[in-house]
Image 1 (cartoon, one colour):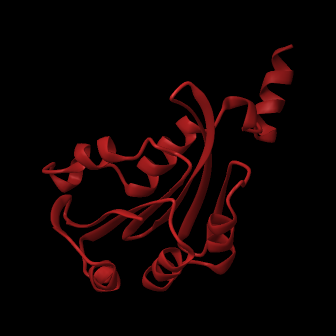
Image 2 (image 1 turned 90 degrees about the vertical axis):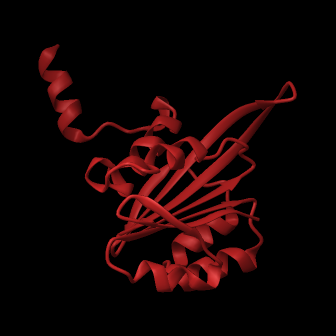
Amino acid sequence: MIVNCVAYQDGRKVADIPPEAISEYVGRPGHLVWVALKDPEEAELRTMQEEFGLHELAVEDALKGNQRAKVEEYGDTLFVVANTVEVVEGEIVVGEVDIFVGPAYVLSVRTRASQGFVSHRKSTRNRPANTIPNPAQKTATSAQARIPASRITPSSSSVEKSSNRV
């Protein structure tokens, strides 16, 4: 289900747009399109693949779900998988958020996850463009906050630094 499909220009919301208009807005200078999907059908995700030119392997991962937390690059697209854990009506629900970030778009795909990105979208509205964080940076920071520290592997340089302190 499409939760949001919004075009921004220079940091300001231009319009809610239909999915078939995505590629038109992505190609315009100064524009960013942010689409949010929740528990999408395969056809919806395939439409997004076509509109954004998403890599087949990343789309397959999003369709399959149950992926490990990771960050991958496919050309100029960053693909982030974050696992979520929420308590819903007293039950623990494990979900997933897949995020595709390109030069002029953000596509978030939530599966079995109720918490969305409304607060992030609201924080960018009506702010001067030069004060809005780069979408890739903002999305990666948000995704990093959702990945449990135990699932992040330190880089070899940080391991070397910590071993030198011992």
